[in-house]
Amino acid sequence: MNTPETVLAAGLCFTKFAMERCLHVIYDSGEHYIPVDARQSEEILASVANTERLVGEDALRLALIHCEVNETTCIVLDTRDSPLYSLANDPRDLDHTLSTGTYAGIVWRVVGFLSDRPHEAIQLNVGTCETSVREVLVAFECLLEAANAPIRLVADVTGGALHGVYSERPAEVAFISHHPDDLDDEQAKQGYTSTDGEPVAIWLQESTGNEITVVDHYFNEFKKSGARSQAA
Image 1: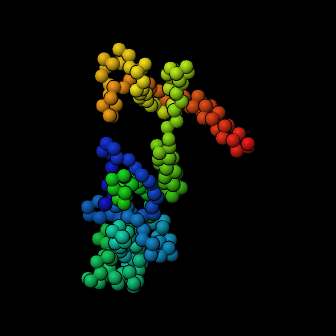
Image 2: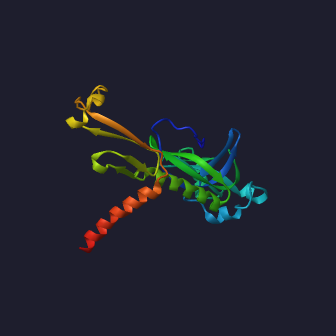
Image 3: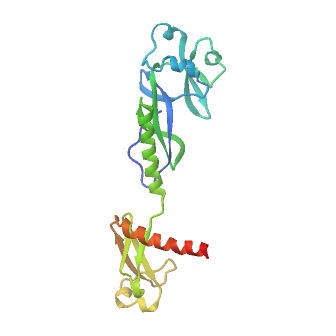
């Protein structure tokens, strides 16, 4: 249910991250962190927020109830005289069942969603401090934003010749030309072809990245032309 995945198949990527408040539940088969259902009574949860197990009167009056909502398993800690508890004891109701696990506290977790399973949450981080877990969420979201941002490249083609490529991150750029002047003997003997099968000249340039200062400079220079156009 909550098994973390650390190795991704080639081509897969995370599309978004989210933070969930969960109940820590211990079963005979292991421990799980299950999202709290929206119908959870905050008053009940607050009364056991600082405990990791139910004892005394709480153990007698409270029960864990699994709830299936939109094909997702959630959980509620509720009293044994509540409507949800009645639903869990109704054999005709398949969406509410009494949990076989024991309450072990309130936690928060960060989950991620992969491109091939957009609706299946993968647990990435768990903690009892909401602030700390939220900081982890922000870090993951920053990484995702950076990964999805366009890679900015600056190519120096002074005099029609390629002199270099500058990039913020490591990059490889293939430059092509169909012009006869570029298809010299050296290029011709390589036998490069275009997607249409026609002869083509190819030059490969790469950047190791970390050239942010150069890239920022030229992109900021270019932005000036837009400002001038608006002023005009």
